[in-house]
Amino acid sequence: MAELKTKQTDASVKDFLNKVPDKQKRDDCFAIAKMMEEATGAKPKMWGASIVGFGSYRYKYASGREGDWMMTGFAPRKNDLTVIVLANNYAAGMTSDIASAGYAIVRGLTPAALSVSQPSTGDGATARLIAGRYALPPGAFGLPPGTTVELRVSGSDLVAYIGSTPVDVLVPQGPRRFLARALWSMIEIRGPDPAPDSIEVRALFRDFTFTAPRVNSDERPK
Image (cartoon, rainbow, N blue to C red; front, side, top):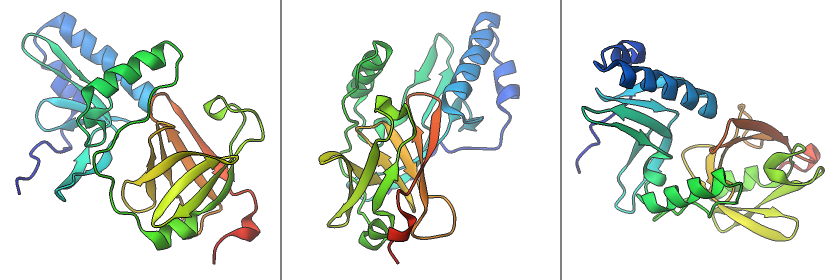
């Protein structure tokens, strides 16, 4: 099975962009880099020899092939400037979904859930430890103050509920990390405790990260 050749490197992004020969394109690159850093909260990194990327995620195809790829990025070309938006759509390759969702976001609408052709296999034991109710801070996802999200186990999957309504099936993205497609967010478990007191939620479409504490820490799975 062929290995993806484009990987994150330690090369200098500044040195790379300073070598862009056209001044206008060079200025545009630095402006885009600044905007992407502010939007993602991630520092720019070189991917391969010619792509500037921000953040990363873990993907896995139905064939079993998996790897790491940038969340977003750009690449100055000879005749144009290529912008990568929500790169690879989490291995689904559905660029039309990305374009439609981006259009919805800029108009203040709710984008459709990101599609995933073959979710990774979940770990039922880990899911049970993370399961529970978590308090969302005021303003999170436009929901009213006092809203909680409950993570329930269904087989080896984690399903997010708001009230009695299921809103998402979380897609594993590596150890203690899940993609919430309908919420366009990454949920991560911080700290050494396998049954956490809180979860960290990072919205992928804007610079917004918050911690959601477990509503009743006494109810943590043992």
